[in-house]
Image (cartoon, rainbow, N blue to C red; front, side, top):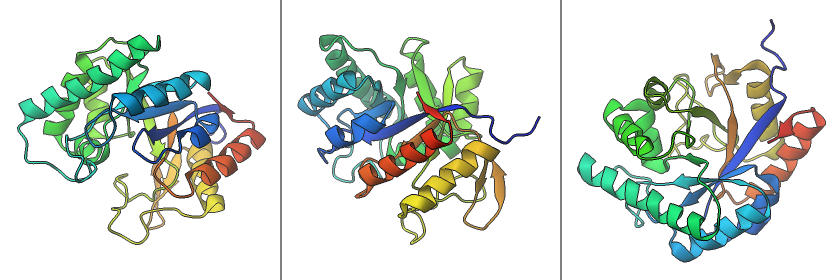
Length: 250
């Protein structure tokens, strides 16, 4: 069977509750969201506000824990013991769960943020921390992680359901890691280019890397970075094109 046009539906997610206050604009285009829960951003007030919006728009809710480092927005590796890191991650997710219980909502998934996300993808030690975190919660809670990553493989071996995440607004290296934000070509700024990038991944189960190579990839959920200045515009363009191609956003 050809790999082309196999996907008929897709999830679209964004990181929210990070202080940009643009959630009301993004939610109509999302099917899931990742809520900052105090590590790199967010507090009880912001979590409550975003959970209410997600419920209003029937958007699935995920926790977005990180290194406890608001100063660097969770984008740098912290000098912290693995035990202390796990304790912090559990506290962050539990803070969101408290809000969810109050608002009569449920936790759908967990997606690590920033440096922790990147490290868990490539470093067995940090992947183990995330697996231990996942094991603290119900089996119904899914993990958002990239296809082929160390964390995805380890989680699946431990009976954790993984939804493979791809990035609409980021370029890829040949090893399926994201091009570093320190590089000028890390971000995809143009809406049409972004849509083409996503459709190629969905229709061919391959990604065109920064070096022009085709690499196998799988996508269950597409991330649009909520902190991107054109996030709402990109979502409008992307969702319209997906619907036109007969791909449902679920």
